[in-house]
Image (cartoon, rainbow, N blue to C red; front, side, top):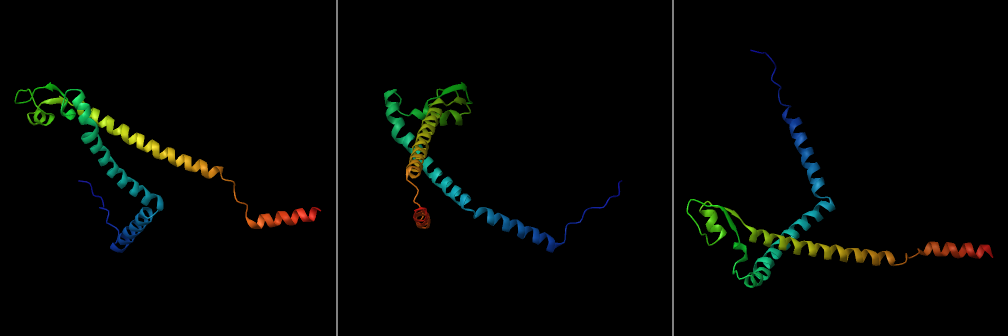
Length: 159
């Protein structure tokens, strides 16, 4: 048996001071402007993602599914391994409930289309921001009144 001292925790007041310092630092971090802006962006992005998801599932994919002769595009899949109950399975959900291993290419195509729409929307947003910046850069800088007056005085002294 080895005799060694068990380290004792720091006194309670010292520990409380560490916790308060940590909480103060965390509060300062979360209240920075860019962190708050990022949080707002994440929340809006999540909501936008739901809108795009609905657009793909409810508006874009049904007509594509009708053109391909399938009513529900999200149920396009291959069975890689039969489940406990033998197929055919009418949906991905039914196949997975039966324990079948499926290759869900219809869901993947939905996800790719959703990504493409989001990427295009972000592209349009960045493009608009860049154009606004370019317009702002093209504007001639307004010379402060003090500088104009100093130039006039300089020019008058040259004469």
